[in-house]
Length: 102
Figure (cartoon, one colour):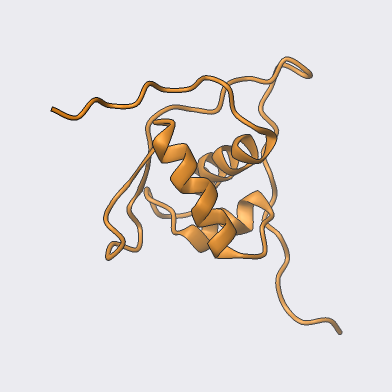
């Protein structure tokens, strides 16, 4: 029998930023399960590949659950981001403006 990995309470700043991006994407979109691109937008990343790599780490640490790759909206939040002691509240990202320069 395969053992489940223990959840790790410590998150790096990048992992925390990604997790807050997941929470914000769920709250600010019409979808219960956000896409990787939506999470990238709310977390402030330009690349969906970078976002996907951070999401895999969060899944390993059991903060989120990811469906098989053929499902586009297969990311489910299992645990919320822990409060940071700095300001004792979660800071939510606003969506990054994308598009060409004028």
